[in-house]
Image 1 (cartoon, rainbow, N blue to C red):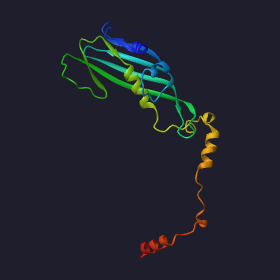
Image 2 (image 1 turned 90 degrees about the horizontal axis):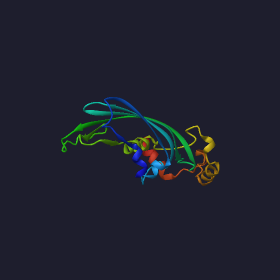
Image 3 (image 1 turned 180 degrees about the horizontal axis):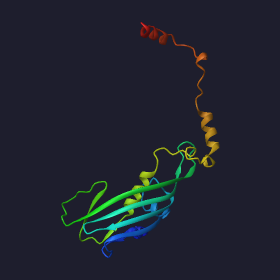
Image 4 (image 1 turned 120 degrees about the horizontal axis):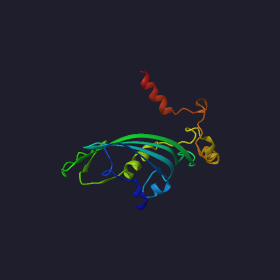
Length: 179
């Protein structure tokens, strides 16, 4: 977790107003998370922190590419992503106040730093599409043609309907339907 220290933002020394931070996210970052969907990436995180008296407003912009595996041919290909997210952190002395929601989190007034590594990790993993296909992304040059040919050789070929022999049981059911 030492490599994640750079993602701790000490906000107590900052003046009220907007502050800008920039971070590089690469393979070392994702190596810190055991079950990450992303293992290989080159991303830039631009963070605009707006410090106010009672809250912090964090605006994230994450751009770059992640390497994902194609669900069809299993080849790794770069996928360009662009993520814009907002997080609000409000200050409170009340420990029982657990009003954490997706966009608002509660920080104790005694805290002096904010760890954004978990937020960055979450935003990037949520940007990974459910289905990854290298030909859909216009990256057909990454596609493993040998694997595609192998899959085609194992696929079941559908005969023309004219060549199909009708099952007499279906004919009986069709007669019932027509009546």
